[in-house]
Length: 225
Image (cartoon, rainbow, N blue to C red; front, side):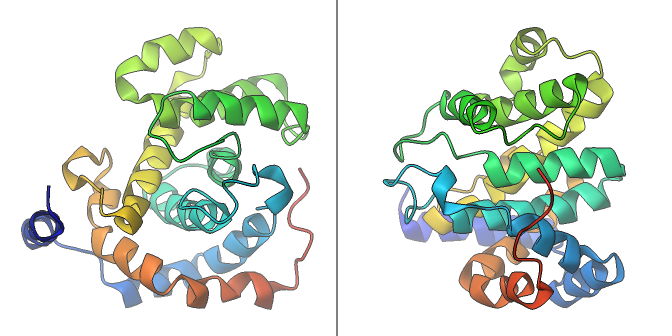
């Protein structure tokens, strides 16, 4: 698909699917205290967790922060509880740390889980929550068609908690594909993500402005992991 054709697909989608106004999103975030939540978790996006080849790539720390912000908005709008939001945020900031290249593959999520375990980035969680977190991180690269395989692999019992977190992370990750002109909006799983295509484009374009929240928060060390 050419760039012109891609732009036409996106524009047509936004015409047929009403978009959430950027200013309304920012107002919603402030009312929910989401700017501070974002800052707390974004401070935990550490360059040392990434392979040197990925640091300045399309899947580096800036991508993780955008996926975090999109995840927090979508997850809150989808009604995820506090526990689920916490798991979602940790999955978002670590979902690509296992990447060693920019290829489109289904194994970098599992490698990210392996690095998380090796670096003890999940030690604040109990066993059940660790398994959900690992499943979500692995699953974002695998896709929903292999959900049953993931449930068995990670021995997931609380499916009602795990599945919505995975759907939100996949949508947030997909929305940030606007950075490489590869978003397929028709594959978005949640109603709230569908309304945020326009916002995702603006977020990528003006991300430095959004990311000032981290600097303004004074929470340099991030949340306890």
